[in-house]
Image 1: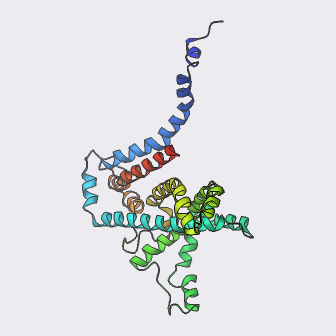
Image 2: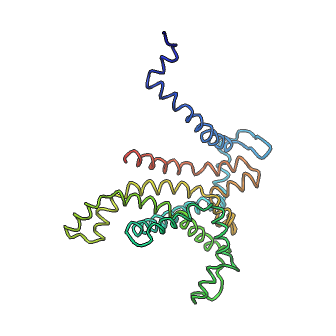
Image 3: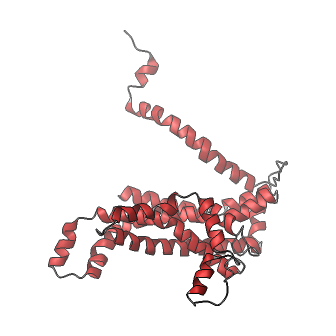
Length: 295
């Protein structure tokens, strides 16, 4: 029986490979590439809500770069991402080192560690909004009872208080991601290396500096790069707690883009704000891809 030319072509591994990845490629193009390209196109137009606008080139980018609110949002986006990632890296590694040692209740501790990660972002943000309330803050109440302060702290009413408060909340929420990643990395390190180091007289710090940290570097790159992308594009947490305030002190790219495009109706300008950090995210994605290939 003679086979059709189409079926004969499927005998080629190369052709069959293209056929098998075609559904995934179509989904990726439809869900990721199309919205991204549409956003880039909108950023080059004068589109507003209800008006498709016309092509204006880079005018929207010139407008936002001259806008002090956008420059403030760019500054706080970098500030927020840098300190949140530094905090999550240090505390996540410390938590993983603790949980990697056997102790009573280790499994329960590992399960509890996941709570900030699995809780819905808006729900946890609302809980933190109550904790940071200027009148009913439980944190202020605790600090007063410990005689560390004399009156309630206005965590969200002052610019720098609000900025640091959001960083703390982001660290709290992202800590399990780093701890889980580092815990997996620690458990993949052979105990023979530590035993050999102990025989050679290495201290605990020397074993960490010479064995643990170098072997955790590849996973550190992946954790930091992925988490930086998520932090740089964080929206729910900031919008729920401060909405970019007070006086735009906690604006980031996403909240400012939302305000300009949806609330203000300036779709072109909002799209330009949303597209502007893409270069940074491409650089971070490059490091992720390179690290995965090296592993």
